[in-house]
Structures are given as structure tokens and as C-alpha cells.
Amino acid sequence: MSEQSQTQQWLDKNKENPIVQFLVSWITEEMQRPLETVENIEIIPDDPDAPSEIEFVVDFADGSSATQKVQVED
Image (cartoon, rainbow, N blue to C red; front, side, top):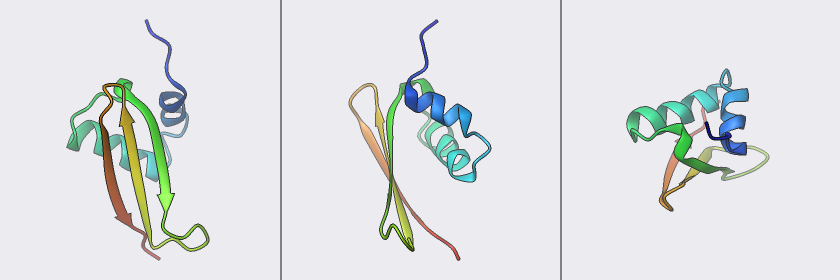
């Protein structure tokens, strides 16, 4: 059994968080990728103080990456 990466541990630890639930659903359902292949996740707000859009960048073990932008609702 391989050890979980820091990113996978973070996803597991925060699985009740709505943002993490969105990420897990996007990765496993929409992209149909196993979470074990995730190496890094960047969460980039367009404005750190009052974001109107957040960009998620996910890097995978095979060297590929995926990006998703989400509008923030008030």
C-alpha cells in the first residue's frame, strides 16, 4: 500500500468542505481520474480580499494538468 501524498491527505482531511467536495467531484466524476493520481492543487482567487472568481489548477502524476474557473456567489 502506498503512502498518501500531502495533497491527498489534505483532500481527505477536509472532505466536509464544500470546495473540497466540488474538487473531488470534478476530478473523479467529470474528469474520471482517481484521486491517487493528484499531485498538487492550486486555488487561485482573482482578488484575494474579495474574489469574484476562483481558478483551480490540478496537477496529476502523469504530468498533465486541468484547470477549472468558478464564479463566487455572494
